[in-house]
Image (cartoon, rainbow, N blue to C red; front, side, top):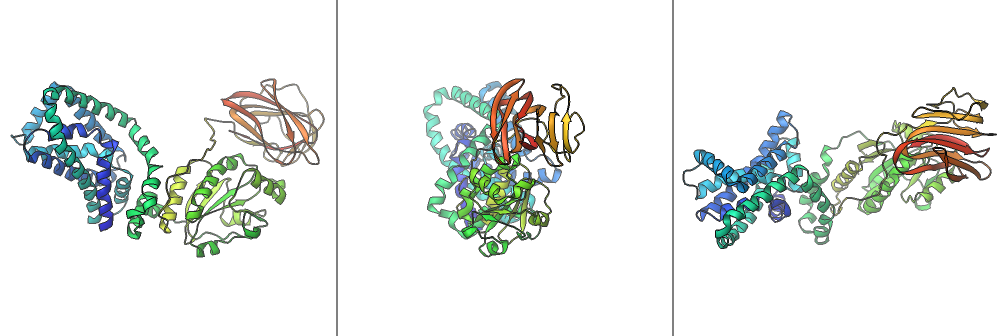
Length: 548
């Protein structure tokens, strides 16, 4: 606890010297430059007291009343803008001073009036609390109150107060030299405060802090070890950064079982969760299949996590559970692993044994397992990568990792806006077609169809099975879609064949179809509504459309 308080004290000094404190400096410098010698001391004392109250007691009150979490920050920023207007517009400032004089000491140049000013500054200073203190306060709001948490917040406030006190002593000399122009200086500082307050309402400051926090901590703290190298402090900081105690407990993770081939392991040997648990590894299981576009779009992020956190104790295992029969082929899976640049272990789950053990229903799906073998975080589908990474970092820190550095930055494609839902070409799951899709060899008569949005149509001769459609003589496939990109799972058994792609009646490209995989048909600069026509050579088989 003593080391954590010392760390909080140093962090408070760092915050007072950061750009975030810029809005408070005009008040502190101008107020500290007037009155007696005890006035600056009164200001910083009031600031430390009110800041501690604002970041602990008010957080509990807001949490108890069920008010929005950002209410305290918003109130502080509104107060900041009010101070700026008071300084920038002298008549408004004079009225506020008259009102404050009725509730404050009659003599406004001593420590008592400075203490009152410091109380108000503490509320304005609250938005400047850095990520570490923010984590402590969040943790405090979700658990029972203890004197230790109050002492940590107070240590942070005292650190900031000491730094501001030094700045105010220097400000007395600076403001003395500018006494002839003090009115204009205060007005200018007031304008700066108001502008900064408006920017803070727009969350410009938090985006700036997040950008810095993702890079600087690993550079400034980790190379030297410092306080973070202490086990007691690192455990406390682990709780602040990753909130592992707030992750759910879903029970013991089922073993990976019933697999066929493994890839990217020593000798292509199977891995077991039991062995990884003995090595104190955190494990991320990703259920995927190589023709799933949603899975493919998550791969850059998974690969980034593997590259960054493997040496810190993370093992990613891709459990490849196939959707189509050809995805059970080990050669196809090996080619996909190589093409997609996957370096973490991959297991074939052709019989859905592991899939069923987890009672999984989605591609992709992530199950994060802590070093004790407990499932602690689950996510289905794309997105929310930051949330999953925070969970990874929290469990790594819980397992003893102390030098995690900044967050990863992977280039991940995400669909924009509403897109046409996926559909299958086989009779069992086909949706959106203009007529019933029977099994067997079928001729679909008619000219070029006029389809509604998200509509599909066959023309010509097709051989339809429950899972696929194979082109025969004069085969055509039409779609009216809304998306930026169009993908289709295709295959051409035996030899390479060609597929002509037309967009809005004009030739767009010709694709050579070889092995069975996901092909990109359309990749536009922006999303839109378009008519698609496909003219496949006889023998090409199609399985599923996806859009993004």
